[in-house]
Image (cartoon, rainbow over all chains, first blue to last red; front, side, top):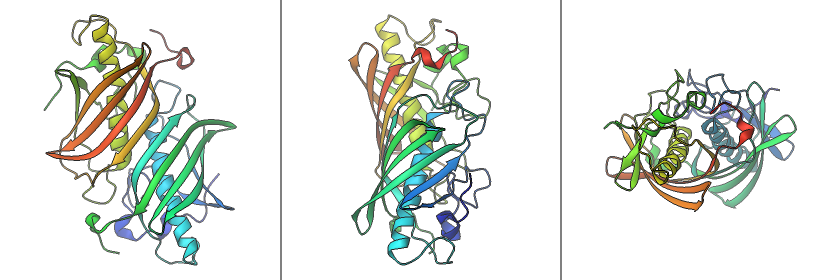
Length: 159
Length: 159
């Protein structure tokens, strides 16, 4: 369960230090997101310290997974709309989260690889909504929605 | 900026390993939440690796802060309703998050102590809604809402 061609590999270096999904953040989660047909997928196995109650995953990590999966999914969608796929070596557009909603459906067991599956909806050329379900095995443990917008200039950085 | 009497000090040991707010989780955030009049307060200074883009705080940490601040605020409210305050050495009720909503109002600067301020609303004897604003100095950077319910038996543990 691994994403071979992840959109995070195409983020410009300056925008690759995110604790959730930045390939250059040494202590981060390193979420990697790719296409599975018309849906988007991120796998993640939470670390042992990322617990809510012993045996169950911390909600903040599930929220983080849904958050970065959302911005990555929006980036995948716009990148595809622009004629690109991860791996063809074009800088991908970087999105930020305007809004995040998570419904915790059931306790999420630890020591399981979680699978986030996303469906992307274009709201506006610069704004996407991403609907995500997080599965532990066959069980949907959380559902989320991210409003993702193209990173505004206020974030600085070079592109 | 420190909470002297935090509700997290009153959580039973078995429920004190949360990565966000558990006093017994060695690598966690150690969020501490107390009363400020009729509102609730949590202070947090994100670690340097908890970055979104260099200079700005990772949204997943802000979501985590709002999440644990929400369950803690619900616990404070029910504890007070039951005649207790943090520090009087009674086990506090432990809540879990059913739903979490975050609106990211503006980029949150790093190297600043954030202040989460909560207002608690009782929906049902076992369910509370907590409205939270997160400030960096005078600037409100994020707003959130948590639906918190008393921890169900499915979480196990001893109380």
